[in-house]
Every structure is written in C-alpha cells, then in structure tokens.
Length: 221
Length: 230
Image (tube, rainbow over all chains, first blue to last red; front, side, top):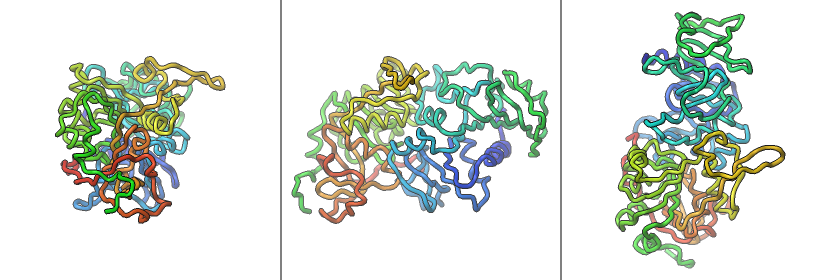
C-alpha cells in the first residue's frame, strides 16, 4: 500500500488549497512538508515552527546550511522576509491563543468523530507527544494528510481509535490518496474523490460509515 | 577581558558545580542550542545518576543525547525522545524513567519555575492518561484544568551567541528555543557562549536574558558533533 511520490503530491496539492494569503500555518513531517511546493509563488504565508520560528522559508542550498536555523525536525531551513524568532513559550502561545490558522499533520488513525491518534504505537514506539497535543487541540483548523490504509492494509479511518489519542474530536478535514472528508458533528462527510477511485473502493477501505456530499468533486491525478 | 562581576570562568572551574544525583536542566531543541562544551565536560567528569529536564533527548551523539546514550541519566522530563533510540531502549529496559510533558506546557512549567510561580493551569492533554496521571485538577470559572507544577533545577546550562561579563545574553536564530526559560529556572545557571563581548557593547534593547539570571559564563569550543542532516 506504499504511496508513490505522485500520490503524496496529489494529497499535498489538495491541502494547499486550504491555505490563504496571510495565514499562519504549522506543518508536520512527511506529506505535510510537501504542501509549500504547491502554493502560488506570490502568496504570503507565515510558516510556524514549534521551536520558535515564524516565517520559515525553504531549505537552503547545500553548503549554505546554518546549524542554528533548523525546523522542529532538526533540518536546516531559511527565514522569509517578515519572519521572526521567539522562545518556546511564545511559539506555543501562538498555538494556544488561536493564532495558528491551520496545522497540517500526519496520523496513524482518525475516528469518525475526528479523534486523532498520531503519537504512540503501544509496545513499539513511545516517542513522546512533542507539540502534537497543543497543535491538535488549539490550532484553528486541523487537517490530516495520510495514506488511506496502513502498510498491512488496515483502514486508518475508523469508528473508534484503538491507539492512544493525541486529542479527541479535533480533526476538521482528512485528505488521503482516495478521498477528502470533512468532519461534521454527525460524522464524516465525503466531499471529494481522487481519480480513478470510486465510492465503493473508499467504502471498502474505510472502517466507519460516512455520509456522501450531494455534489462530489472529482479530482484528476 | 575585564571580569568585574567574576562571572567569566574556565570550564574546569564551572565543572565544580556538577555532582552525581543532581537535577540538571538544559536548553536546546534536537540539539540545536544545547551547550556542547559543558555537555562534554560533564561527560568527562563522569557525572551520573542525573535527572535531566529539557525539551527532548537530542540524538544519540548530539546535544544532551550524549549523556543519555552513555547511561548518565536516571530520569528525564521531556516532551519527546523519538530522535534518540537509545533513550527509548533504556526506558523500555526500565533503566531510564521518562516523564512526558506536552512541549509548550513543559516550556511553561520551566518558565513558571524561572519566574517564581509554583504551578500553571493547563487544559492540554487532560483526557490523556500519560499527561494527567497523578495531577490535581482545579475548577476555574466552571472549567476543569490540570495543575501543572513548576520545574526548577539545581543547575541550568544554556547556549547563547553572545554574553557580556554581567551575563546578559543574546541568542542565535532558532537556537534560542528553550534557552531563555531554562536560564531563569536554575538555582545556578551557566551560560556557554560563542562570544564574550565587553560590558556596554550589547544593545540593551536586544538583550533577551538579563544577566541577573546568569551565574557563570564560559566560552564555547563550538559544536563538535555531526548533525543528522550533514
């Protein structure tokens, strides 16, 4: 079930549509890190990093790295005009105070209620929550980008998460290589399908029930 | 270099404040902004049974990760250990106690300790057993909160770009991260700095940590590890 770069970019491109001029956006690792590549060149977006950067720019050219200018994953970045540095409390103040418009992150499971489980695989990996709980709970909009199923083919969109929750009822939108869902008070609503998939394939690979929008947008790959 | 406050020291001199079984708080995020010369000094002095408090456990050969991967810590209070597999291994073997705290709340607990407050109220991770376990609740204006206790340490170590002889500090880009908070929370705070500049040469408007919080200053020998991206 591994996804090629193209699928990852299809997901990232769709997520980029959610970003508007002037927004403050925090990106997780993996597919979310591809999102900036799909934004219009002239769009002003302030990318936020938990380690105290607002206005993060792309990776520097090889040889131009600054060891004291890295993203939260520890990799060298640059600073865009208008960017700033702050300490960790201020970086998280922006999150808890509701100043981060969107966080885009990966996940292990998401439930029909928008519960997010993305930080522990019991008995295997307990890396710690890092800043994920604050981002999931307090960013104004939480978008999950992930493979529709895990490597063993098990659905990752589930009736109820079996993995420990990062945060309950926090996800607003799920984008996979098959479809786009909005999380509503009544459960998941499928709004978009990626070619060449159809509703039956999505239903087969999704554990929980979901509603289907009256008008489904079909997105070509 | 003038040293009117007696704060500028040699590494050998400041190593006298470290001892087995101590609580040690460190600045840095994934090793960025962690003081390499002090960490090596602590290693070489053979200090062990340390309780470490800081954002994360770095990488096995980077930052505070060096102390962790050589088994010098008995407990870590951090938000993340994922980039240091040895920390995870020691935890699973029962040789390292790990207390996880959500990253921003950990930073606020350190800040609270640093500014003389006993605790903060938080609504982060309340439904999560790992976060809420053994923590008292407080009802404020009809809403339930966790009481997150402040953190202080016997010694804090930080990394800064410049210090003057009073210990006024400015930091470099994202290497600031937890350093200004950690600097306030130590009973004794040691700043390792890239450059020591004459008194009066730092722009007072740009000083991030006032020297009031800094007890000792040592010059850094610079980062001597290879970064994960190199």
